[in-house]
Image 1 (cartoon, helix red, strand yellow):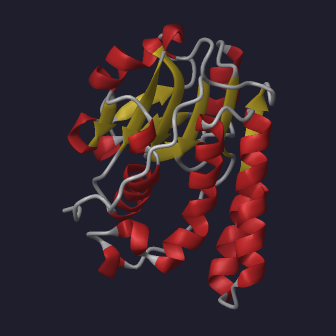
Image 2 (image 1 turned 180 degrees about the vertical axis):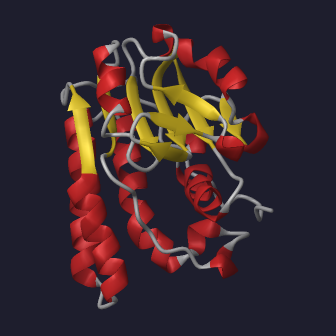
Length: 217
């Protein structure tokens, strides 16, 4: 089984989130990764059925996930169930936990983790080439990366989302910036787990880059 890692990068939010996934997660999973122009449904359908975990960022509505250029990846009730059956799914996209997440679990996903409202963070565009160094984005996104690292270590989905929520709250308590605190507390309230909290995936070895990835353009 492989990991289907889908990283959109066509606007400021997706570029920021995908930068963190490249920095912290991509080195730990198999090289079947869809970044930028590859983050589209035809390529996704080729790798998703063989995956045990799907991690995707993009834009969301309550019942759908879109990736590169807002191309549709999933819409509730309108996909091949082989893409979801038996899988752990983490979507870094707004609102997908409201309708799409429950639909994926109903059609065989073991566990869905995502957000039943928007996911909020602050992006400083001066860090466009190295989004992982953006201090405001780090406060909001590193809890997500810590959660994914735990999942890839073999922790349960319940343990992984607890790490994410605890990270949001710890960073909220540590900042004196009201807007950042509001983003962190909002994300903590709206992070959801649907399905089996004891679900796990095959653990992957810890691999870290000796240096950050090249500047993104």
